[in-house]
Length: 181
Length: 212
Image (cartoon, rainbow over all chains, first blue to last red; front, side, top):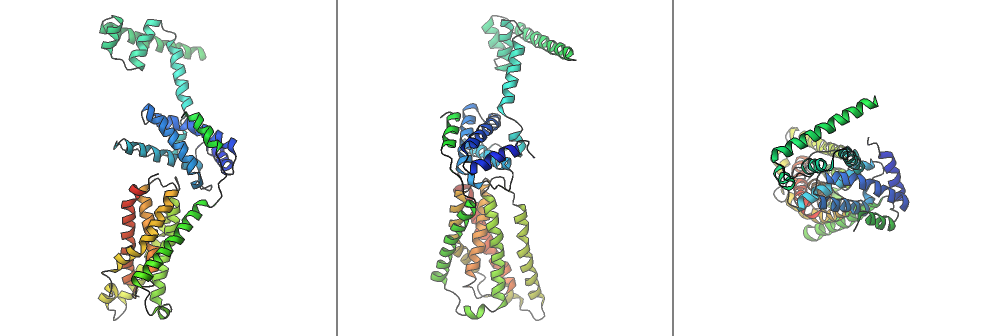
């Protein structure tokens, strides 16, 4: 059973009876899961479109929710259908892996926001020049050659600098862990 | 449009949903499709001339019971197929029941002493029976697709096949009022062939026509 089932189902039942406030909360909560779900499977622009498509589908087809069945399974069925539809649209014959509703409701975009904030906090401990190098190469996918050209350093110097910076951050994390104990 | 605005718009236009909307859609479509099928049967084939007498025979009731049972489970399966995340393996398993029953009756008739096996299997209309079942089923097939498009099928080939299964069996029920055959082996083979043919057509059309 999905953790959010009871809460979301209660909102859905209220929404089916015409409760707009419950419906708005439900759609906002579902949006967080859908964003994370599509972001991990589609390109950035297509992902937000798919979120909106799915929200519209949920709205237009809400009468097809059988209140005797799990609500999360119903939403997941629609999200997965919209994902397959998007693959079909861009003619990508990608195999859509077998998944269960937990795939959708196990994540939401707050996790990614927290991870991003943690990374930023950690990087802030580095001197500005090193921070830029680590960000370019480890997060933004800039090639070592490009980074070297931009900074005027040699490629091997760039590699060594990034390696040392990551190592020092690692040590920093371990010390933080000791302090917690 | 920003997603937040979309949520505001959707919740702004929210209206209560009446319970039983899905069932009503399907029942309405079935009534229309059935009327169409009866018209096709009456106008293009005509009822069998000895219909009143036939209604007291075992063969007629066997045909009607077999096709009605499959159509009943088929209706339920179409309803499941129109709802995302709804399980339907139970419905598919229950379909085995009428098939099993008619197979047993057919076997009993074939194995009875003095049975005329070729006649029991082929009757007089084996060559046209499956195709006439498909023809009578077409209005029901169109109606079932129309209804499914209003629901939310997520597995389109399967949904199309189930719509075809329902239309084929309900169409075979109507066709039984024209068809003079009464042998269980004939019904088990050729009626089932017509139903499967309609299901196959539904499976082919599903991915094309059921997208939403």
